[in-house]
Amino acid sequence: MTYLYIKSLHIIFITTWFAGLFYIIRLFIYYKETEEKPEEVKQVLKNQYQLMIKRLWYMITWPSAILATLFAVWMLILQPSWLQTNWMLIKLGFVALLYAYHWSCQIMYNQTRKGYLKYSSFSLRIWNEVATVILFACVFLVVLKDALGWVFGVLGIVGVSVLLMLGIKLYKTIRSKNNWEKK
Image (cartoon, rainbow, N blue to C red; front, side, top):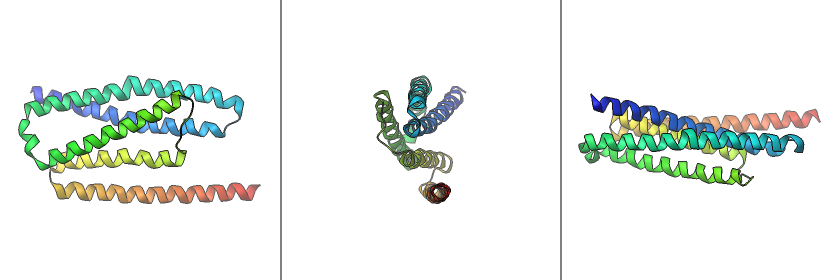
């Protein structure tokens, strides 16, 4: 019974961690796009986004990452045999990638605290898909517990992501063409 409570809490904090990671990139995009605004609006928006980013990062995202990890370790203590399975070792590799992704978001957070963000809004949109791929890989690994199933799942989401990015690029091209024709 205890195990099921721990597992439930792990799933809850994984969900809030990913929600924070998805939303932080969206806030970074909004922050970056303030550079295109008139000066009198730009600073007001930047200040507001910095506040929203700080609250999301330190009140939701970091605590969720820590709690998800604590409950995961607790589950592994209760089920140490999982560390001898291929799917769990691969999943832990993806968790390491997730922490690397999280750390890259920390670097972007630090940049916004200094008043700049060196990435374009388009590259941030692409970067946001990395977390999606990691999420899909982890879910397929946990549910299917075999190497082949998660590979197809990840390849599927990568394919969808590529199509999505191509669609965004096409939309951006059409939008800029329409804006140019209006001038």
